[in-house]
Image (cartoon, rainbow, N blue to C red; front, side, top):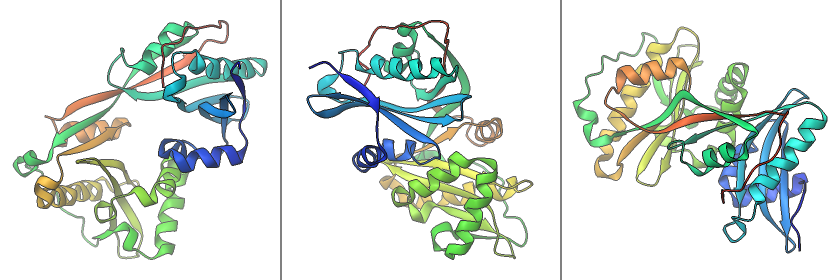
Length: 291
């Protein structure tokens, strides 16, 4: 039976999100849709994307079930999406992290021929926790502030902070809500001022033997509070000893890259971020078995 492609219903997307954490995260933002590949009566591939009106389609997640790989399904999903975008002259892009240009998703977009792939300055790095005690950070919590565990704060204070974050980055705020259960709650800490307002916060998750700093955020003028939180996180990881191997951090913005470059000059960059932009004047591609 040939593979069939079509827009998935919300029920299909919700079912996939329950099975795949990556889909749940990708679907956390507003205006999220998904295209599915159907064969043998089941969904064997999916592409999740965010539609910003008729101006931009942002691919958030692509996956093909292992038994159905290397059959052109990944390209079929992208072709179906791009055909719809072409009819409305909507731009299509995909931003993702990969080890290097030889990673499967990089190869997929390069071999298609209708996407331009560029490497960004953003990166994901790691640093051995056993070396954290040797770091000399000059960190002082600003006067009038205290450090608290974010999820121990009153629900109203948490919601107020998330709503404030939405004004700057709706995707980050949605991610915090979607991944609440996956967060390492004792390591999700914040700096609170005398009016019970959160001015800075960091959120961490457990990734196998590592701890991943998923999000670091501060309001304008409170970088010192954010640095103090990183200092407290260092203390928590040192106390954890051999239970935690590495600290992983995604440095996405220019400000976060500058901060990490200063605090962790010896960090190891393990992935870079890439952006694939669709050229709607061309079509086609060859499959590379991407999942």
